[in-house]
Length: 392
Image (tube, rainbow, N blue to C red; front, side, top):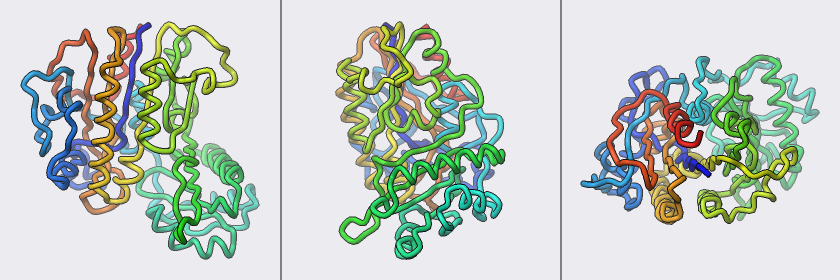
């Protein structure tokens, strides 16, 4: 059975795209290069062996004389720098219309409808903000009023934060589903509604990553995932992949609380040790697939380190991913292709805390794939084309 394993290192961009200024980014954006420079090099021997250091000059990632993989740079076709847009394009769906952003907060008519339908009593904030900062700032008022904290960012997101020791997690999820419906009904074209649960730990408001949920707008067309599912294949979504695609084209899914958990699950999936029966969607009967995609999002680089301007943590997260790349590669068969890429940038070394409009790296590895330099390719959807030719 032919398999494709896609590992998305969330936000590991490699340089500002020509239209970066349209997205309020600076030319100096280069997430991986700047993280490498800040840390005086990274220890990533496995991705280096595939050719990562041959793509451009990354401090401490030595170019290989004889790389074992194919390596190159991808330029996004879609107009965006967000998770949804990037992942959709990886799966073959180019977004012609950019998602809407709300630099002054959400319109009052939307917020009023949200309050009315959820009966939450009111909302706090309704401004663009850093999630960790706004939760800390408004936690006391949140506890007094029990109003949810609603905020956005430079990206197309409607985020709702609550202390789940005070407001049940399922209530938060229900409020997010209501927000998703209102945004869709009003044609606001918002990419994601994000549930941001937190608790008070050691006296400090702390977000609980494992309980985060993303409620994405449904894909505007069919993706490679749909094609695989509809032709007898399985699509195993690890991390927030099922949220990004609103479950479309997916047969099995499991959320993760950390990169390490996602990497362990990916390794198990590659080794055929993942309990697929336990994570199969209830409306899908057990079946013997004729092809398979294992699709993993590794979000810590973006969520924990990119948005929080922490290049040291970002570097350590990349090194942890590389360790698992070294474990995954020996488990691959001749019927497998491994793809390592990213979905956008989030340079922790430049001003601001939001995503950056960047090129991304791509690495392909397979036992029967001839190593070579792929250069610059227009379109993340070239990954979908490559997988399609591999597994069909």
